[in-house]
Length: 113
Length: 115
Image 1 (cartoon, rainbow over the protein chains, first blue to last red):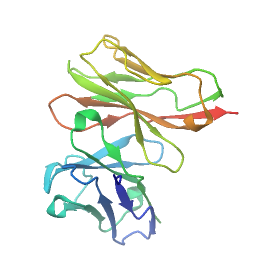
Image 2: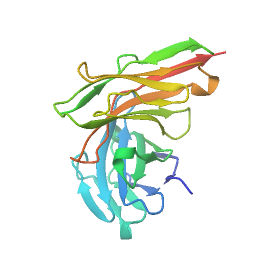
Image 3: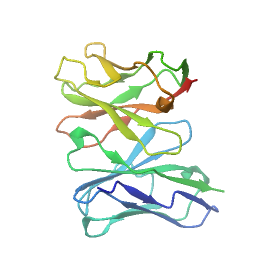
Image 4: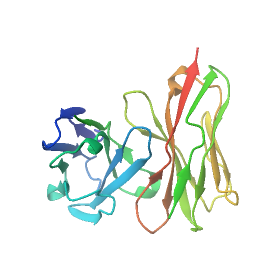
């Protein structure tokens, strides 16, 4: 089966611009998660979808971040406008049953200059 | 709040040696899951091993095993007969049971296997 796919793998944008990250989970996985790792720090939870619904968005840093999951399939994470501190690697993961662990994508490395 | 601490930012060992990565965590929960994830350079993170807190027996997956000490809240990963392909970032992670699906990660340990 195909794994979790993230696009793009890298993105370099200027401060104030908008960027949209995409994640395609494993087919049939109802749970989709976004995490972010800032250089040298922990991987931090951003939010969790169950199908198309936001189950937990407690980790979203501010209202410049908007996540959607259309029809319970792929998800997008938009950052608008981007700030320097938004730089990092954004990971997407999916699971059918989280207690067995997630399957991660390769991540999107976002650099805001 | 739950926290996960990995006290070794970076380690290097010779190929074929055994190496142990440390992890401690803090929680007031009695039932939870612990994980070790591995992220090779420029590749995706994969699950190495998983432990259920209610099980006393330490999990083992081929050359990877854990030393789970519940009272001490310690969850170390042992890699036996290390191979060059084991070079990666290793993340220890925690998830509460039946509360939410949120996995909490440590900062990671960068492991270098030297030829």
